Length: 443
Image 1 (cartoon, rainbow, N blue to C red):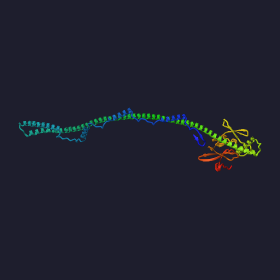
Image 2 (cartoon, helix red, strand yellow):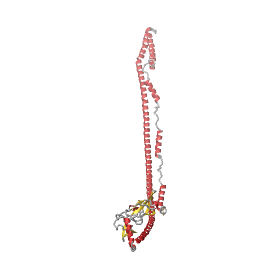
Image 3 (cartoon, rainbow, N blue to C red):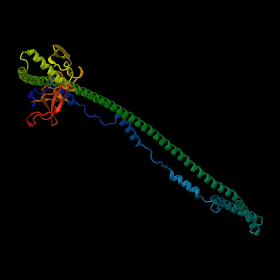
Image 4 (spheres, helix red, strand yellow):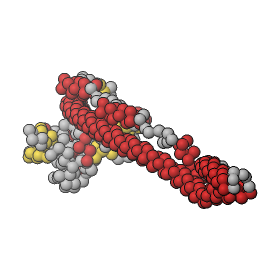
């Protein structure tokens, strides 16, 4: 690293091994980032599959639609009952009547023949009307007996009709009872099927809910572990990143401090050289002036007196005004181990902290720009507002009776020129010293 304006050079910053180790540790950790959460899709357990299979097998045995196997016979009985003709009695169509008729007519004929025979015997064996008449009466008697049977036969026919009707109703009742029995069994089978179906459905739902709930719990537990790993990885990442930043900042801070110390030593060396040149130039001018004064004044004045007079003049120039005591010059001596600056004035030693201007209106006046660095005398800043001063090689006319060097600053492309005023403890901006071949000042 180099500064072209000052000729200062310094080695470039190189990371320490500790910084490299912490960078490698962070890189290794970043390369082992926890991946995205993955988990197998839900698969039904064997218990769930078996429960579903049991339900499917059961549904295949669902009772069909109820079909009464004797419905045709039952319908026939119903049809006979509904379409049965009203009772009517046909005497000639009654077989029993015909049987009775044949029987009574035969008996009537026999009785008529027997009666006619007996009547003929009474008359000497000859037929006569009497015989016919009594014979006919006997025959009619049997026919009357046949007629007397008609009400009985009617009742018998009516009883048979009613019995047949009752038999139809009884048979219909048997069909109804048989139907009720078989339909009741069918409904029992349906109820048993539904009960078993509901049970198997409940078992399937319960088993599936349990199985999926267990899957969800396992997945949530695995996800929680994954999030813990992610959080741990992020915590370690942040720790390693902060550790790297701290180590790198400390390492670069060490380098920067060393750089600043080297640069300060370099600039202080330049300032000391400039101060020495300024001092030698002032000494030369003083000697020349002293020689002239020696020619003008008493040649017998001792060199010590001339030196004392010079210091008085210089002190007066820097102090600006006041008594002769205020114009005495401070001569910088050294900086002690505690960082205190030592000066001599009129044979006495004075001590000031860095940045305190002994020529100021108050002994403890602190020069505001001294915080950004000073020349070797400890109170005159080597900067204006933090911007470093650069030598111009031009010496001003006297300010408060003392010659001063002209300095310049360059900030953001703008160049300004400055001279030190010890009375005020600050730099004052001046005109370009290169105009018209030299410094121009209204002072």
